[in-house]
Image (tube, rainbow, N blue to C red; front, top):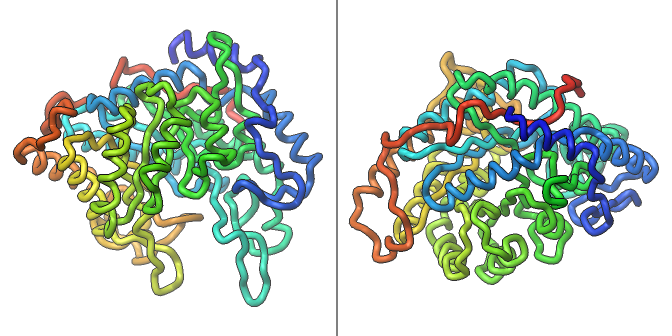
Length: 458
């Protein structure tokens, strides 16, 4: 960690947190609004968020600024983004070996991508904070009993009892300590640079605004507010309403932010999101995560790309080929076909090639565990039983499937680079061919995640 990172972390710890009602939608009234849990105990919520506001931030403002610089490189076609991790982290998944395996999968995939696209790879984990689930629909019924849906370990439990499914704000504190412990393991893995990815950043969906507001701090260097629960915060497909609290929160913090764009996104909506979240058109500020589904990506993505280009928005375009391709297996659990994931990824690259714009990266749900939650493609060796499912949420790619997907991107990059130039290719800086300029550390090899070094566990 650089000396300026340490100073920034220490100083921002004592700065006044930005926890005004303008950035937080508290729902300590027993009814959920704005995607927020229906916290039944207002006093307990106030106590927990008050204590979180006094805790050290998990990352530094300087680290957020550095990631914004890296994402500006992605937007300019000078780097490629790999963002990945669990659909939903769990408090039971804090074993150091599990965390190292997850980070190792990202690092191995980043190494292949680096060779594939011939560019530095910016590695961002869905980790150290991705403990939330949407709970859509809001309730679950089993054997005639209706209870609140599972909203992630930071809200309630998967156990199907009234007590376990009641939102408990004390779980927000557990999420903070679990995230801090995870960051310690990540530091140990990446600190010496021998693992191949010296820079490693964290991200999660900023869904629970009570938690995000409690970990918002003003940077003493600039007096600007930063959401210091992670380097990159994103707005989900279900909460990107222009007049909603999640967009308002993201518009106020200086972090780099992202927005998920599903098949229902209209060009006019995208225009509003760009104006709200990146009014200054700052490179690296806004990342757009397209999740259209394999059947519609070639139809729906080009108008959005053209809209962003017409708005002169220096955004980074990222493909999430996972969420739009979820189906139900015979046993009722969600699954994804590996070939469907590859098909959407192919459509994403083809759309950018046709328009002369830059495919900036991929957003994956993946794990280092030997699972077969997604069907087809490379499978773990030694093999594990078909349908081996451990995710608390949606199905994830295993390590072999993740690396196989990176090789597929290599094939795409080489094939599309061999095409005649698009009439609009003048809008880009071209696509690097595989194997040239490859490195996974976009700067010096000593950068590690910032945050509190207290070693506490959940």
